[in-house]
Image (tube, rainbow, N blue to C red; front, side, top):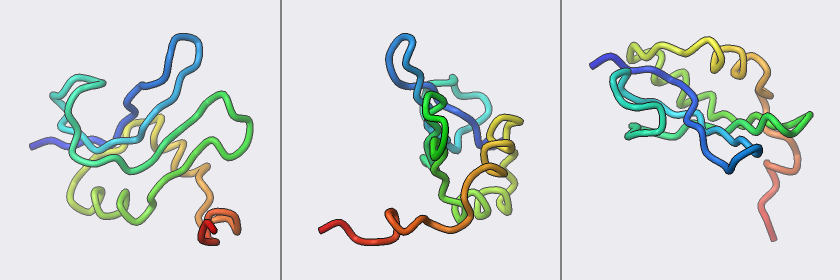
Amino acid sequence: MAVAVRLRREGRRNRPFFRIVVADRRAARDGKFLEAVGTYDPVLKEGGVHVKLDRIEFWTKQGAQLSETVAQLVKRAPSEPTEKEASPAV
């Protein structure tokens, strides 16, 4: 099975929101997927990319190919979680 890490569009009209998913290449863009590994909000100027880098690394070692857009987003993604994300919610 050929596997790809790509974007899945969600959100409403004129307010896009994307999930970064691992899916079979033959599946529809917004169809079935194997695992959600992140999100991308293009409307936000900063901090619009949240990626589980460990899961992306796992899937690439299994042979998954990153789409061009996802490869750029992974480069932009922060490698360490920010203080706000690292602290547990009270």
